[in-house]
Picture 1 (cartoon, one colour):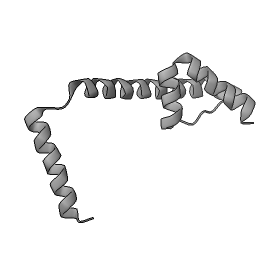
Picture 2 (picture 1 turned 135 degrees about the vertical axis):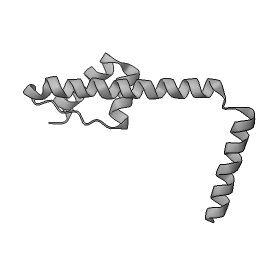
Picture 3 (picture 1 turned 30 degrees about the vertical axis):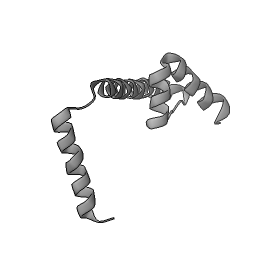
Picture 4 (picture 1 turned 120 degrees about the vertical axis):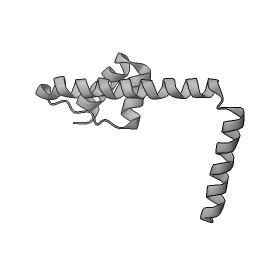
Length: 88
């Protein structure tokens, strides 16, 4: 695909957003999702810090952060159980 076509499509979307504004309901849901994923990453970080003396290490990536963020402490507990019992 030509770079000109991509740039023109990007500019067209930008102009439409400037005229009509971003859909607020979609932006609200997206921001809530991002906040939950960041909170999940913080949960996993603190679990790794405090669990390092027990040999616990959960990798911080998008999937594990989303699980811990959207499911809360139950999701973090599930990740810990998976780490200890399923992945030796």
